[in-house]
Amino acid sequence: MKGAIRFGTGIVDFGLPGRGLADLTLRSSRWTAAAGGIDTFFVADHIIGALPPSIWLPKYIAAARLIPDINAHMECWNLLGYLAGKYPRTRLRIGVAVTDSGRRNPAVTAQAAATLHLLTRGRSVLGLGPGERENNEPFGVPWDRPVARFEEAVATIRALWNSNGAIVNRDSEFFPLRDAIFTVPPYKGKRPEMWIGGQGPRMLRITGEHGDAWCPMSFAQQPADYGRGLEAVRSAASNLGRDPATITPAAVLLVLAGRSPDRLDELAASVGVRAFALCVPSSVWQRHGLEHPLGPNFSGLQDLLPHLLDHDTAMSYIDKVPPAMVRDYCLVGSPEEIRDQLAVWRDHGLRHALLLNLGSFGQSIRQAVTAVPYFVRTLRLVGKL
Image (cartoon, rainbow, N blue to C red; front, top):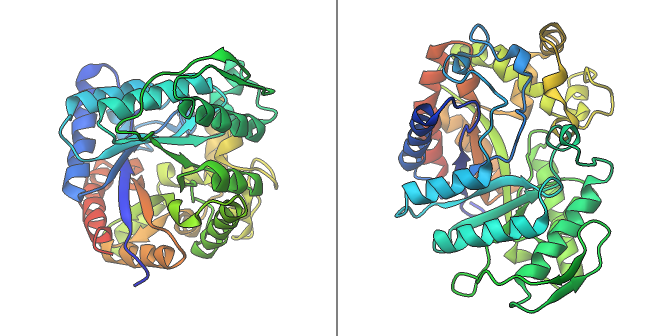
């Protein structure tokens, strides 16, 4: 064994019509967290959902019976504050995986994360990434240079957090500071950990320079790919005089857990689960001898505009997805099989897995409901790796 894995999960935070159902969903997610014995609990930072709303229908996805609108995301920092107040005694670390560096001014992000860190007595994690086109371009935020904006946002947050209340002046193409002051105090001398999501060469270098953890959305990665990316992060850290061992190797992974192979095949063939293939880059499609329907060089979720896909177009794309591709961007199997798959990721360096239950996107209520105990069982087994 090459080291234990810590683990966490996330919450479905979209389409909740009113506080009653929102509270029910939060309690359900909280129960899953408690039953699974997880270490960290994350929410997403979206305005628009990741899947086409045109296919978010009860005949395709059972969750649509209770959650009528996939685009009605709750704002992440307000949600985390609510969770912190509702569950003040929990040991869980909570954060965003990951917050958008372009749509949000970094000073506001620095303030939000530092505030949550105080309110939770040091349990806040700042997940940070360049964001997605769908949550920027439709709202008037430029999408021409997301990584450049991201790098400047990270440097700006660090400058404010490290200022100790002194006046800050910093030149920046995107986020200049002019006689700025930041006095939200750290908790016991510590700021929130910064977990950076991203997989390109420049993002890996930035992670090595500024990150406390590397936390990519690993839908397109194989364990060996992850290992190579981690080595690039560590090399970048070493080149800058940082101890690479201080950077936590994390990742977000999708999970389809069940017991019966036939039931798992049925779940993998469902519309909601196969729709996530639109969120993966063209390289995953190419591994199956197919071209991504949005182009041979399509980057996946980062550039997807799902709300512009009408029903017939979205279904024509989803119909191209073979169930075998699901097993490429998702961990599929019994809880024991998924534990063994994660052991391979561990052997390539992973130390903190954020697991998302894709079983909730099954076509029938039976599929969605029965996936939950298998997911919880998976969480408990991962905790023993």
